[in-house]
Length: 121
Image 1 (cartoon, helix red, strand yellow):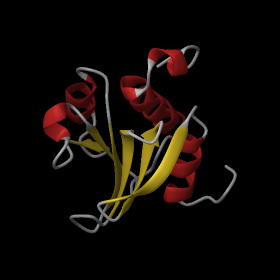
Image 2 (cartoon, helix red, strand yellow):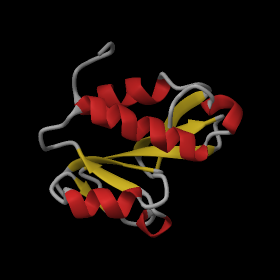
Image 3 (cartoon, one colour):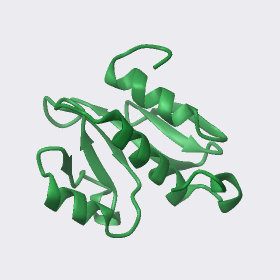
Image 4 (cartoon, one colour):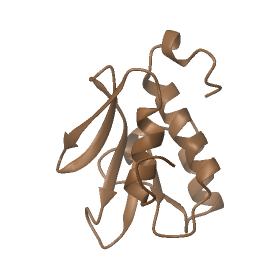
């Protein structure tokens, strides 16, 4: 991946590759927005514990299914978990193809349909 090989660099590259996305700090962590307004991914580096993760919007039912299937890789994040957001641990072995799909799905949940056409989310 261009721009670095650490988890933050990789998440950043995936998020910024999507149409009309921007990054800025929110609550002290890198956060990505669609058209500068709608949050779709929030990075969480040791935010509440000594873990590295990101939190993202998720399609209906995805949070419950993924957390039940692989609780060592996925979790219900604080603050936004009640809205169906998904937490993804990045301090465990990571399948970056799967992370790409999860981030694309998060984008598709919040972005206008015109921007998501052809993304497959």
